[in-house]
Length: 332
Image (cartoon, helix red, strand yellow):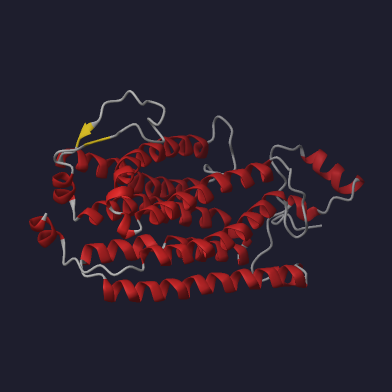
């Protein structure tokens, strides 16, 4: 049997029931224990599992190589320093997520920290995606001048996609600043809540797998969910126009990469978490129910982010000789 330090039965199950299942139904103790440590993992999995982990690690390394080649191209071929910086950070999202996921694959007990790392970086990607669109026009002044005689639709998802009766909006610099603030709040609150969660976790108060009504993690996630919806609205408003006016900058593909990553890091993660918490996924030693759900999510996520890294490379690897905001704004 596992040591008391390793043996951590689900608090929702009575200990008597856990011992009954282990003693009378031959359920391994590892199904009720912490995931294996990184040092013990290679000795506890079979050759097939190690081979799969090796292949997925190679895919993560290739994603890094693809991004480095893309970054070198952007540094040489994009003239505007602000566009260059934003493109470098935004296009790195699939690669960064792949690296975090690969670490979680080899260090099973780091699941919570991997999710925090992915969530923090992707929250910043909300702001970066908005800035990619704004900088595509040439800055805030240029986007206001571009829509000086045009009104934009605001009935877009996820807030108001079912409200076609909403009036169109005249674009002003003040409203562009409000859009930026609306997205920046997500980039600020997500890392802040993650930091608070780590402090509470150290004191035993925060548990991301606890979905009870008194759980701090549940209410923090509810607030972040509302903030996410609020941040997606201004991005959707500007992208609706940008996919037409900025088609030469592959804006549609860039936004598709962002949307896909959002689904993979939130919806897919939640689905596997629910399957693990409810015991739908069977326990396969040395992984318990929850640890195996994380493992399956990581397997898929590394493959998906590898494909997205290639797609992002094709979208962002584009020559841009615009010198910068000032020159472009004066020329408009």
